[in-house]
Amino acid sequence: MNEVGLHATMSESDELAAVRQVLLQRAEEPGALLPILHDVQDALGYIPPHTVTTIAEGVNLSRAEVHGVITYYHHFRSAPAARHVIQICRAEACQAMGADALLAHAELRLGCSAHGHSKDGNFTLEPAFCLGLCASSPAMTINEEPHARMTPRSFDALVAHYGDCA
Image (tube, rainbow, N blue to C red; front, side):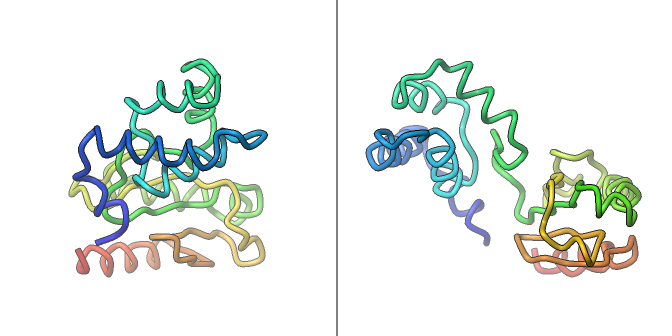
């Protein structure tokens, strides 16, 4: 089971305790919001909406400001991810080499749009804006493991492999 799955059963009070711990470590740092959000997501697998008020109070910002940062950056999620997270690069080099077609294929294959979950609940599909594999595009990751020169066929093979591992 991935780290996200391990944290999916935490209570709201446990999640708030984890957020408070992160705030204790980071709140006084200049520009602390992004590191705090990263730490919360690393600890919980996502940033639960009920923790936004606590985070906002901890860094002396409004809830709207914190929510705006969470929703602006594609990396942060407000709901738990599925067991396997697929990110397809949306940067220019990958687009030039067929990432749009790969994403369209992934959406059809998984039965969801970007930021969604597959019909079987095993996969979360997310856009990424540069995975650093520009010379080997189009690129994607599955559970943070990079895959380059992706095609619909290689995508299907990976999904079948990880689906069998479920």
